[in-house]
Length: 190
Image (cartoon, rainbow, N blue to C red; front, side, top):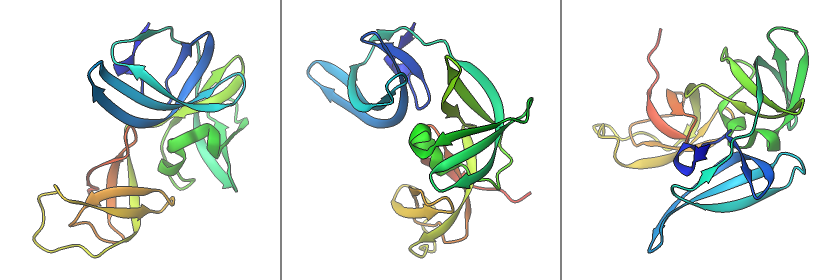
């Protein structure tokens, strides 16, 4: 059984008799009745997407998924092609199948990615918690502002937009948390 606070991008669960996989976390809303977690989910069987509001503490049955380790080979338009590390088979997922995860990976990365399968069909991916990306555009940094409390928009090399501290500049390598898209730190050069 899964509770609402264990659900994140890539988690699969049963809701009203159908299997769903989380594509995007839309936030939380606190009210008189408690906390509601907003999610964008995809029905694994029909392929349709919808937004759900789930009460905190609600319990769900988890879905049996098979996982395989892969590496991203190349991107062809909106199709992401992965290579199975054991069978060297090509596995294709669309940008819609990946949801928010599409903005965290590129073929140049050396990350191990896990594809999840439901009844033999690939339905989503699990990424490392932290990934390194390069900022391709943001407003110039402000010298001396190292607190990291104020944020500005920045575009990454994958085209994804994230919020970064004011001291970040174009061409900086940064570490991003794939669970929520938040800035972690500047990447350390090795």
